[in-house]
Image (cartoon, rainbow, N blue to C red; front, side, top):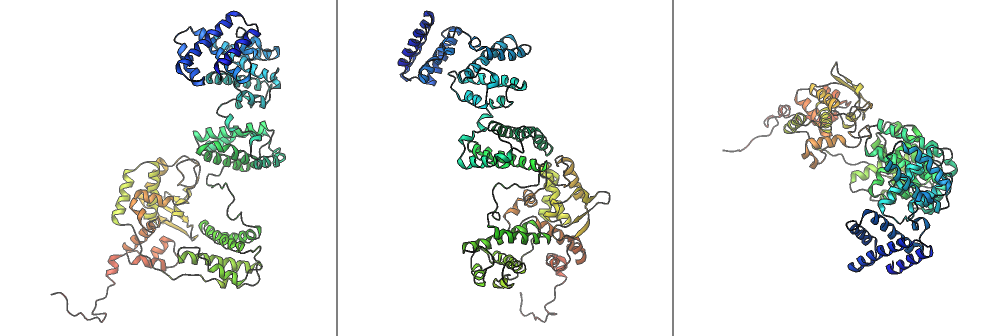
Length: 636
């Protein structure tokens, strides 16, 4: 701003509009005072210097004069920005209320009359002042009736320069939001106007015209389908969804963010006359997430939960959400049409989820190899191509390579049996298998068992109680991690002190006596550590959504109790099962008893534990004489 030139323009306008001489004199005094301040600082006019000057004059002049001079300065800024000063800002001797057209004044009177019984006289007067200011801005946009206001008008109001302080601007918009809420309840305008005026919500609403071409096309392509879920019905689902989150244990920030994000989406849909559709939601989210920082991850999960809620009427706390196409989904149809039924066959064979994933990855790897070599179907597959695949170095270990080839051999056999390829012998082109290897059997030492007992007696936090109960089930009853995580209330007979389960790995049903210390650890966790949840499983997450624990949580529990196990190769939770079997043998249990306790059908896997029974191993030693080995020499 060229300060002196702009001042001259304002003073000329005052003369042109025949503003009274006292007002012109007051303007001169104001601009002279500010001009002197700028000369003293030696800087050009800026918002920062303006605020410094306003703070300074508050200590020198009466409050009324400061308020009037504050308005004169914003007249100056309006002149600099627009080349003129609007009549409503120029004639300060007339109130904003009196500057309103009769139609808007009539609507405002209805609102003010409703406020009169709830506000003090001063607050009521301030409400009239600030609401009148907002309505004057709307009047400048051609609005003479509340019923004619549109979302675009409200957006213009939010984004326009009001030539006032930020604090005053915030107050004006806050009063406008309350007023629009009243008119919305009266059916005079959409209910979303007051929400749009919320400074926290508006930045996350988004404007379709500013979206990328790809997302605009995505939204327009789904516009017709979105009419099946209109905006008013969508809004009615927000609170029931919040209640569903509460039911699953969500609190605080998650609930606030869920309401905030879905409300912002509601406004976007209402502004652009769209209904709800998942594709529209994700296109919208991909645009507004750009200015969110790391919080977009929280938004994404909430929106995924809502998408699930619209399909199922609930959320699945045990589920893991995918936000991008999987490697399998990115393969051509001819690949997926063979892999899908192959994996389904493995599921019918009761293969574990981890095993199914291993089958899937190896099949995807094989198909990518074929695609890279120009194949568009399995039919022309030749022995030479299979052999070339076998020469690829995918893995760093021979065992991993062998495992992949074993799976691909099975896949090739499946392709041949189901007519995807000619002949049924292509699987013979891949070698598989690896030399057997022996591993040292690792068990927990007596000192480590004492550490577990000490941890149980000295740690009482919820997650520590859960860790103790899990590890006790492994050490004292030989449970695998999968069986610990699947343990349900119905599996425990407290009266008979026993646990009955169907083992996840072998599908074998076993019933074992429950030691007192194991029962006490489980009971203490249930009473003092387990979150309140209707989940049938005993061990659940400590944070919402409460549901099945996944991954290596049992191994992590062991590591928290015995940190030294982290550095050991193969130092995971299965060591507790080996320790259980070894202790049974050391206590004179027979092979059949150990097999029954472990749920094994073959004694081979039990034999390796015999080597750890020191006392009984010594009884098997043969003398050198009996073995025909003569002793010669020796120590003197």
